[in-house]
Length: 284
Image 1 (tube, rainbow, N blue to C red):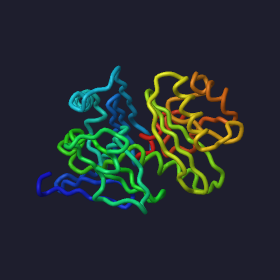
Image 2 (image 1 turned 90 degrees about the vertical axis):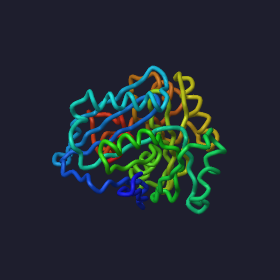
Image 3 (image 1 turned 135 degrees about the horizontal axis):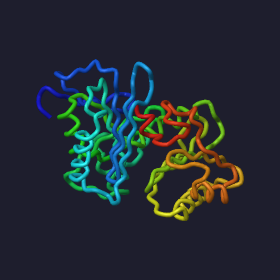
Image 4 (image 1 turned 180 degrees about the vertical axis):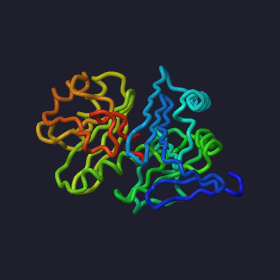
């Protein structure tokens, strides 16, 4: 970055890249979720607290970071809603190149060591972290630097964080007054995330890629077994790209008795009556 920019690590976990000559008083905020398999855009009207634009682009196969940037650039050149000025821009990096580290064991100088044991990283990768104070942990991850650079050049100031940070923050906020253990499952087209929480604390988090409903239920039941949870007893809450007519819902209900779809009341911002785009819509 040039001399008149700086990177700030906030206590809430997000990082803000500041460019001192670009301050907007727009009534709109923009959040972008970036994944090698897709892009999602969310525009919020601050005056009405309404979603004014929500667009998800799913690709047939995973893109390279360069191709993903080309598709992001094309999106900004195509959709008029993305050509406005925004008072705030947030980038959510949604990838498997991440790990959770309890704050008691966390040392900012050891970021590479935390990641290298469970993911393949390159010597040239930029590694950063989010503070998740509500869970007293850090999310260590690899953001797409070319995407961050593009957003910086286009907008100046923006925030970025990992999707796990957003998801954990929101689920623990929902569960802050609950003592019983629950399993939350955030479902995307080609991957899903499992969170278990109890007594206002995170008990488990992991991310799984899947292709079929059989893959999906296998990972759910395997996780339940490892956590010594009885499928006849523990409640599981599904959210994201799923509804009760979905084959994934039906197979979960076959093996786990207490299953439900997350109520739209738990969403910060509502698009329709379901919890689709859960991470994106809870990112601002």
